[in-house]
Length: 345
Image (cartoon, rainbow, N blue to C red; front, top):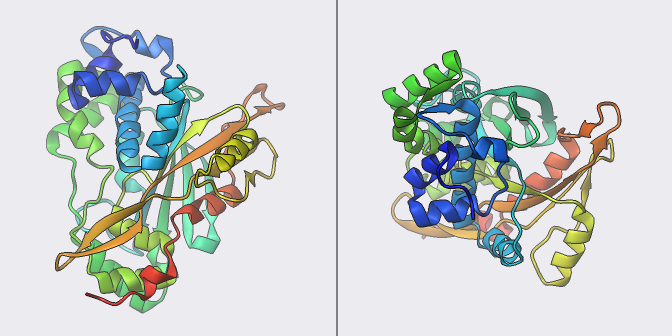
């Protein structure tokens, strides 16, 4: 059973309810020292871990293939080692995205106060995107990282840019004054009162969602004709694109899952160093509503697997990412030609 009297458990159960919260805590490995933190003041590390547990729980609610895998792990008495979550954002050449700060800035204002530092930049030029890894300063190996990417609208043509403005210009900011004040407290003090943290957790978690109105299907198709990633953001927003289980041998796991008929990608992604290996389930299909109450089946989020070896230069686990790996994994949400060519109802 997960310890349920510490700060992380109190935050998670406050957000999800007792039954779901304890279930979420028993799904993800949490560092014992973080789990044991008690008192009426929450450290930034404990709040970050609680937020990640809630976000992982939400990802499983949207990804049946990931849920089935995790249920199998739990049935054997195991837990997932949550390695990282991935987000996609939009950046225009100038200015914000509606009421949201531009691109990754909408999330660095959350991550930096909670103790995350940028670890590396990964140019995703083929996708006309930039990825950045954010790693927790206090406990980098045990608190999940974020792979935060932004799509550069100005690298596309004028027609694409116009459609992107139509879709994203009305984005709302989910962070209220209390949430922003809490983040400011974490930034200056590294901790905050539990009551304030619990009261604002929901608003902060809500940032990891779609913030813009329902897109027109015609605009979705236009974005899709140039960028699968832009089209994905149009329907899914800033939700977790994927969450990742860190496993000992991802190649062996992929072979087993494939033999079981699971929707695993064909190719294993291997970093230039050879120390980071990744694969993933293909994105689950989801039904999404477009403007005018039009329903279409589109790619949703997915579940990923990663193995990390020890970096001989440091003697520690290699927490890096890889541009080639990331580009290959992003293809898991590629939409079918049938969606791109389907007629408007």
